[in-house]
Length: 246
Image 1 (tube, one colour):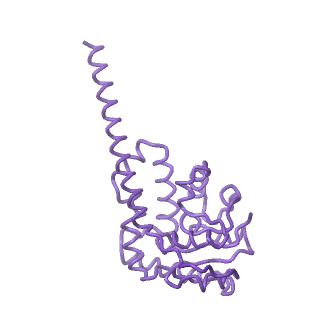
Image 2 (tube, rainbow, N blue to C red):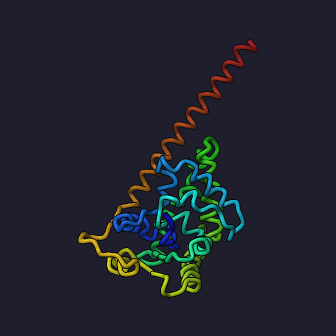
Image 3 (cartoon, rainbow, N blue to C red):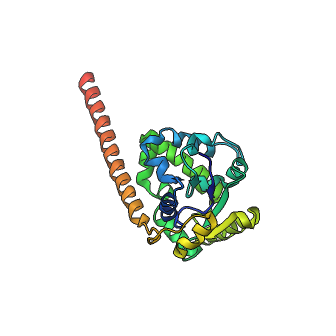
């Protein structure tokens, strides 16, 4: 397979619903969930961590992660849309926007996927687990640092970055190869852009905020378990040393 559609829109711009829609249209789609939830994609997190630690604009062996996909939306693919345009020159570009604007995007992002930066429980996982260290490093450098320019701690700067990014994509992609899209628009513009038949069913409306919230709750639970096991192990080691010295 080869990428036919490159998603440039930030996470939390309807990308999960778009992901489902593209799969329904016969375009196997890549999304952050394919990195962290698809057990068949062992090694993908290591790949994206390498991307995060490479200079912007660097070309990679993209086939290592996109071999089974013809489309990509959401993080981390949206962070390298320029590089992917070079690697896949015939691909079209999809810029998803939050239906309620930049401010709503910011609130949604802070409330969900920004947990890697604003949730102390995730810091415990970074300290104690290889997954936490890899995912934290990748997201901090590639998503929040490079693509979002380190501005998520300031609402006004983050909203300005969102709007500037939209302008950057529009300026860089030929109009005939670009669709600026809100999931509230439904099937018609997406199907017309891709030249495929429109399904006779409602456009997907996935409650991804609740799904992400559940993932966050699972992470918090895991961090407490890991912390408890670590404390227990330290206490056992101290007790054993005390017994040996006594």
